[in-house]
Length: 160
Image 1 (tube, rainbow, N blue to C red):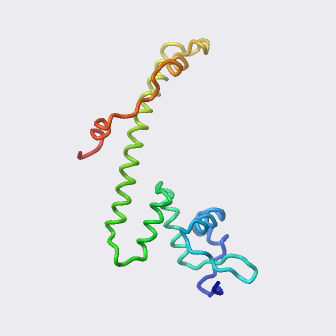
Image 2: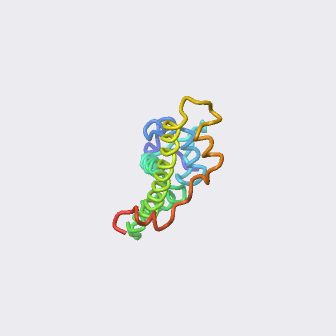
Image 3: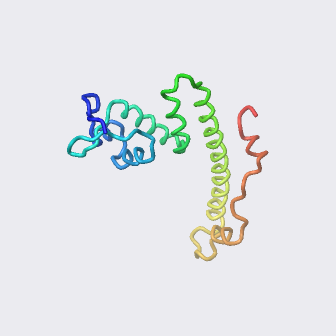
């Protein structure tokens, strides 16, 4: 392995502090190939350059936005590829945005169902014996949350 240069002077701990990531996360990202393997000091300690800090910041932001590891790898591959078009990044983000919107619609439907449970309990049985609770009754006998009709999902989206 190459010897560390002045440019490669960040220890894994310093890099963790600067990027807001845990040391174990940095090791994991290195292990799965999201970042290049670190150089090692004679003592065996990892050392990283400024490029690793920038890359890990990108990875952290991808993680914070909920991108998958595969999407993150694809986005990272675009960072240094001048011959590729930024529309590739937009397409990855668009697919993720569509998935987030779909999940949000599911969560909103779940919220409506749970709200009905709580309201019914408040109005009909709150303060009574638990075995007579409408929430427990409905959970035990009702159909449960239903998947959304694709037409309902489409109608909940803006512009089509």
